[in-house]
Length: 290
Image (cartoon, rainbow, N blue to C red; front, side, top):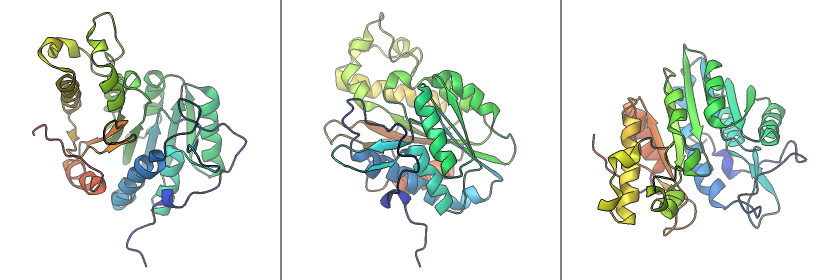
């Protein structure tokens, strides 16, 4: 018998409600194969690696404020696959530590509703929220029990401009919360020089006051984006979190990855040990000090 549960993303399941909207990516041509094989694989592996810890909590909560419709179409494939929140629910069941509450949201009512309906069809304890994540996140945390509760905040926006630091600050009010964040290095790489213009503000919500700390005249484009990311990391640490040094790049190719998956927690053992083990083999180490 296997020593741990199977990774559910390796065994695609049929869509319980195929008539509902699906995610086709920004160009409506389908998402990259890396979404299930890299991004969702890492999510599964983290849930498997922490399954014993989850079993010790009376309340187990997933928060996904960028949930999409709950179903994706990979470019070039005829069949569809589960979206991130559905993958998380199926994996929690396989781990015998199912989420007791799933709070999902999207700025699109049709997408948020579709996600809710798909999770409901799978008997998940779900509640959905419609609106921008900066708004819905305050309503979500009101639903989270304050005692005997472990929460995973799964933050997966398309672009850096939607990764508002306010979202993270609000979620940080929860006593026991871990974060898995998709940080768009692709957006940062393409637009960092444009955003040095004080009349632009796309990155300001992600890293408040970054222009006051980073002098764009001192750095070339490559170093400038590294300094921006380091500043963002320091903002996270300032909230009292331990940020894992393992930050795997996913999507695209080695020359133009889409995201860096960043894990942080107040639990230093989880941040330094479990996520590092999960990210092995798909990982580039960054060291920003203690």
